[in-house]
Structures are given as structure tokens and as C-alpha cells.
Image (tube, rainbow, N blue to C red; front, top):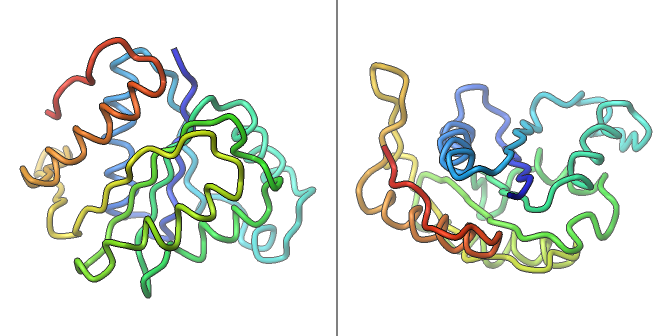
Length: 184
């Protein structure tokens, strides 16, 4: 099975984006994939903003990209684009850091006005970084993601169905023989 790097570009520790990614990580792991989470907000700000390519944490993050067979990239949408935090990491990676990799782009946002951010802002960058296959991305409205009292994630039915479809496409691209287990 594949090693999947799951990258959250959200600056918030209580992020819906990160929670959604961790939910999807569990589903990918249930199919036998090794999932490695990377929250960009945990990387040192001085290294990200100072373009310190040699900082040990940036070197470690770069190695995670190199080791991964596939990458899930999740970001909140601000001002019709992916987060500046995610951009700061992508700028420090080698030009073709995604060469030969399958990538699943995901975005969250407060308005359907941002739904095209995946196709017009994020996808071109992922493509320029050499991704061999960028599967259909998915945008989830903030209001479609809620934390249940037990800490689990509740996703609105329409959003859950769309996520199931893109995860199935991603799994197929990774060579997973069966569709992913349905959302809990």
C-alpha cells in the first residue's frame, strides 16, 4: 500500500480543515495505507517566513514529501486562494517535490464563492510542482463540518457523499482494490 502525506495548511489549532484531514487519514489508514500527518502550523514560523531551506524542521518536512507516494493537501480558503501558510511551505520545497505523486486537493471555506479556489489557485501550483496525477478535489463549507460531543467529526450528507467519491478516486489512483470504507 501507499505512503500518504496528509498536509494541513490551516493556521488554526481548532481548524475544520485539519479535523477533516484527520478524519480522511483514518479512512485511508483503514485501507492499509500508511498516513503521515503534517500540520504546517507546527513548523517554525521564522524558518517558513525567512525561507530557511536548511532549518532542520524544513529539511524534515521536505523529506516527508520525498518519501510519500501520494499527498493529500488541505487548506482553508482565504480571499479566494489557499492559505498563505501553505504557500510558505510550498515555496520552500524543491521545484518538482510532487513529481510522480498522486495528489488530492481539499479545501474548506465559509462561502460557495470560494469553491473554485481549488481549480484556479491550488491545482496550478500542484501541477507546476510535477504532480503526476491530481485527482478531482473537493470543497467543503465550514457549516458542513461539526465536531460531535464525543469529539468525532460530523459531515453533512451532501459533503460526505462528495468526499466519498473523491476518496474513491484517490484510492483507485493509489491502486487500492476496493472502495474506501464509508464514513462513520
